[in-house]
Length: 359
Image: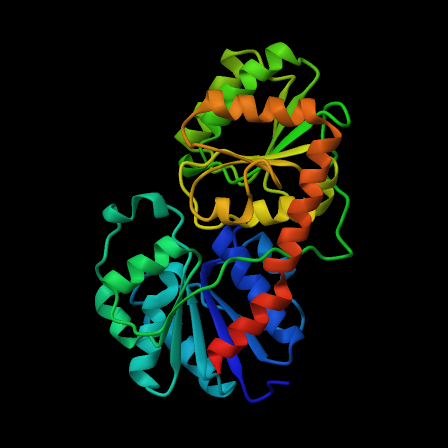
């Protein structure tokens, strides 16, 4: 038990996303292991608030600006009252963590780097992160590219790689029923953001649909209703695919959704380590992923899934068709992916390693 250890997760919002989901999963996992676990969202609440365990202490700051004094004072009071010794700051939430450390010098800061565009780190802005890293005690990177970047650019001696983990609750809801024919559904679990390169997938599926018109594509993820969203919907309309491609927006019953799918796809230009890929594994789905971030550390090509180059709709199309034609062999790949995710990307392994870092 770790009753003396008290840790707060800091995250800017609780809208669905990889970093946000990890912050919630970590807070819940720590509470399950007897750690005094807290979570603070600084700017926005969102759907993920429903996933926070009742054993996790929760604070919403409603921060209006970078230098919101009243928000800072509320966090300062919360940390003092609960005798929290470690601030685990995710992504851009490090700024307020540094302000707290300037007041409480004994508080330790762990900064968790979830940066998704790890294929283009040369363009990443270093200021003010580089300056503030002087007050970080530890950096956690979600993949080796980010670890290397941190070593080269930040003033921190202790830098660790901790790959993401996924976790399904046993009591998941059954709300979203996918359209299309059972056994012929392709799923893409990714927020509608350019980095996820849905257009690449749509180009691949457009050709698949001509050959196999009964197969359908299902896009699940936050729709920001922006220009990229318009581009996706215009593509679907232009190629008359409204009866073959379906958008569901953000959904809470992901395990149930994945149980209805036949193939999982990620067509991203860039990634860290996508939680959705690990969720495909927990659902035992055969998968096709692009070779970005740490995806190929999870999926060994032609062993427990298929790996294709990014920005190549032809290769993506060929890989999806290969899984469709393989049938039972593809299902075996899904089972092997499940074994990989459970053995190397489990919540238990992750939380155990994290507590060692805290201590």
